[in-house]
Structures are given as C-alpha cells and as structure tokens.
Amino acid sequence: MARRIRARDIDAVLACNGYHPSEFLDGDWDPGYRTAQEHPRQVNVFHDGPGEQDGLEQYRLELQAAGYCVMPDQQVGGGRRRLHVTKP
Image (tube, rainbow, N blue to C red; front, top):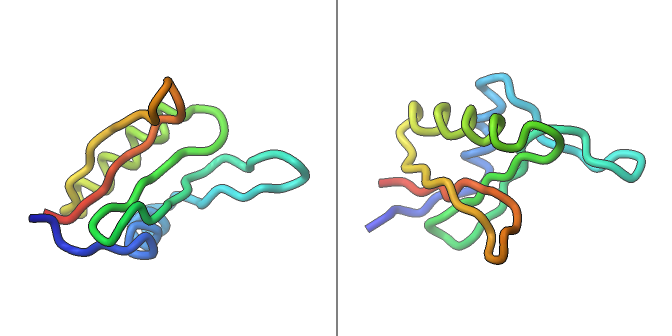
C-alpha cells in the first residue's frame, strides 16, 4: 500500500534539480511544473507551457531517481497529460 505523500515534497525534489514552477503572468502561463495534491497518497505533476511531453518525461526521471513511483497518465477525454506520483 502506498504511503502518504505531500505536494510540497515533490516541489522540493524538482526545485532541487533545477526545475522551476510555472506561474500565471500577464494572462499566460510561464513554462514550468505544477503539482496538485490528488489525495493523501498521490500527487499529480503537470507541465505548463510548450514542451509538455518532454517536460513530463524529465520530471518522471528525476522523481524515479529520488525513489518515487511515477505513472504517466492523461485526463479523461483527451485532456492534459500528467504524472501520478506515489511512495512505494
């Protein structure tokens, strides 16, 4: 069973590896990652801006190297790509 995980822990791993969070500036997204707490045992990671697929792949590799279980996913109906992140 997966253990509890927090979005701020995922933020810290990505920030320590040189990635920047996205920001909404002047009516548009500044490229970067964004985390969202799905429930106590899962965090979702999104990439805002161009290069979504490449950005998510880089985040996946960093998070797996840090010991997290990462599953690529896409929102229902062909929506946004995202990563489901849990702790084994």
